[in-house]
Structure formats: structure tokens, C-alpha cells
Length: 174
Image 1 (cartoon, rainbow, N blue to C red):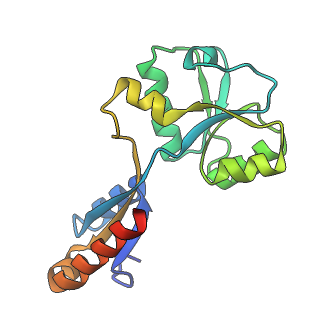
Image 2 (cartoon, rainbow, N blue to C red; image 1 turned 120 degrees about the horizontal axis):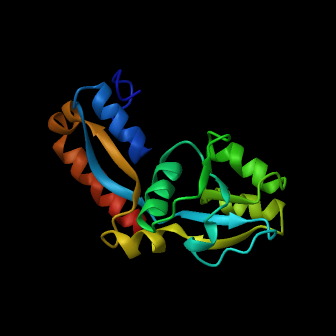
């Protein structure tokens, strides 16, 4: 919708924003960051995971999107060489369903999927906060998973509306 101009502003995962930027040859811009630190490793209780090192030799299911890229980077930063990242469930909602049904032992899920899965499967438990893991190896607070983008032409044509939008966006976050 941003690419064809039917939408002027959108909240997107950062990987989708980058794809739209490339698809439009730079005709969109980031206005604000809006999603920090909502990614977790959950288990069904059949595996003990207290640290990243406990994932060595394990298969971890992760959606084939930002969560998978982020998790892979954290695995590498921890020097782990024998963690299988399985992207069978391409979408977080599909992995959420599988985790809730007890079909996977270890999964990487974002909120609100964690809460939804836990409400359906009381054995699920959050074992690692991937933002905390990220912050151990990379600049603290740099794990941005979502942003607000807008068409550059709209930003240039409506500076007052953009300023008001950003003011209200900030207020809603606070």
C-alpha cells in the first residue's frame, strides 16, 4: 500500500520497512521506532534452558522473519555452533499455534504471541529474553523490531500533519 501510494503512513516490522524502502527506491522514510524488546525463547518444559549455552545441540523453531535473523545473530554472538534453527513455521502465528499445541519443544516468539500461546498451553514458559541477550553483545537498546514509515512525498507535502502525528505517537507510547 505504501509502494502504490494508497497509504501514506504505516507501522511495520523493520525488515518489511527495509523491503518497502528498496522496492520504492527510497521513496519512504522512517518516522519513528515503535517496537523494542518483545522477543523471547519459550519451552514446553521438556528441555531445561537457563542460558544461551543450553541451546547448544538443540533445534529451535523460529519464524522465517526478523525473529529468525535476530536469533541467529545472537546464537553466533554467543559462539554457539550446533544450534539448528528451524523455519518450518514461516509466520509467528503458525509457530504460536504449534507451540500452543505442544508440537515444538523450543521456540522463538514475539509478544503478543507468547501470551496467546501460554494461555492455551500452561506448560509453556519463557526461558530467555532475547532483548537482554542482544544487549549483552550489541549496543544496548538497539534491538528495534518495528517502526513507523511514511511516503517521502507525503512527509514533504504535509509537514504540519507529520509533526502532529509524531507528537501524538510519542504521547501514545508514553
